[in-house]
Length: 251
Image (tube, rainbow, N blue to C red):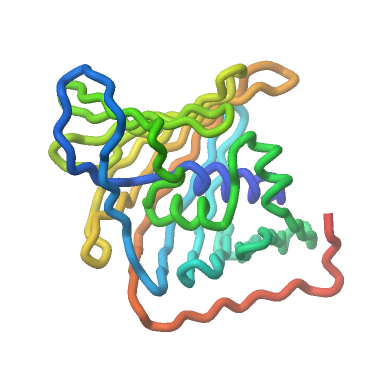
């Protein structure tokens, strides 16, 4: 697996994953200023294991990921391909480091350059919130909530990206998120399912992510499926071992 695919998996999966709870009742079909209360998963440490599959028009690639988090501090991940550790990632408050054991290379990314590349405010807090199913964008007085027949729509905008959250009315959880750039065809849609308890909250164990982006050859569609088989929160201290072999080349 290449470093570019690692980065695509990491950022596309986590930057835009959100899950929230509403507590207001609105008039059907009438947009109003948002007063939705968001219920977030709280924790000291998080540990999860998941299967990720990436599909496009030409190929399919599958990896297994082991994920650990120390709240507001560090996110640690390892990727396994056919039983062999293909790479790892360390996300902290300053940067993201991704290592490919197959290519014997590593990348270091800072948040300002990533924010410019994705046209979206990227930070540690955004990635941590997305990974845990917490809101990825801070609430604003400009947020709008609309009530449909069975869904609440929470509409937000940051810079040139419009974010629409489709919240299941009975369950108060997001089932679908759409992100679209105003002046481009780039878009990302996430469908959530298989909600299960994690601690005293509800967590989406499955997600299907569909990415449309403009490439030199035309509009490209890539689909990512994300399936947790383990997700735990607690106060038991976890280890975050991370080193880069001296012979690996920085790209």
